[in-house]
Amino acid sequence: RGGSTMAGKPVKVGIALVFQTPPSIAAAGVLTSIADRVVERNAKGQFVIPGSQVKGKLRHACEQLLRGMEKGVCKPPRAETMCPPGTDPPCLLCHVFGGPACPSPLRFHNLVLGDSGKELNPKPPAPSLRAMTGMNRRRATVAEGRLFLVETAPYFPELRFFNDEAITGTLESEAQVKLLLAGLKLIPAWGGMKSRGLGWIARWEEDGRIKVGVEVSAVFDGKPVEMANWQEVRRLWSD
Image (tube, rainbow, N blue to C red; front, side):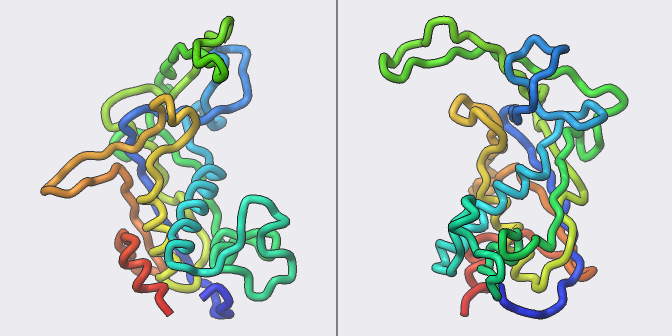
């Protein structure tokens, strides 16, 4: 499918992420905060998960799926180990996400902190602050003089980041859309400091099955596409 010359058809994917713990996506420092590490915001001051992170984490998840199905893909993120310019066709991964050989047909947009599917207006809530310490790995003790403050998104139950048009552009087949949707379910945490408990997606048991806090709505060529799992993706991408 990666080398198909079929014209792309319009696709739109809405994403909502429900968190169990607040994420911390680092941004450049600001003079108005006492925190040593501040979180990413847009021009309106709203907390966001950047589209670049959506693309990067989703690409890595889809790479895991394709490698698990023994599909030939290049080796990101280093440009010299990816499909070089002039490669025709590029690998299945570069065909969807782009690379040195070709641009991506998709655009990835910021996810914005919201409440029940609505942006928090007019004034964004204040961030949470967490005190943390640096570790001396050699001595396995707290490092001297390494107390620091970290900003996170404000914490409240069912913390939600969303965008009804998180991914837009064109793809060639529904199988490619299903790959994206299945990849989203493989991402357990977003942002930095995951080992310190930040940015983990909500999980709960319902009717004997584990549910995850990832909600999507996808439309391909004017028709809705249902959420996929890896078994369905394997069937669609089987030779």
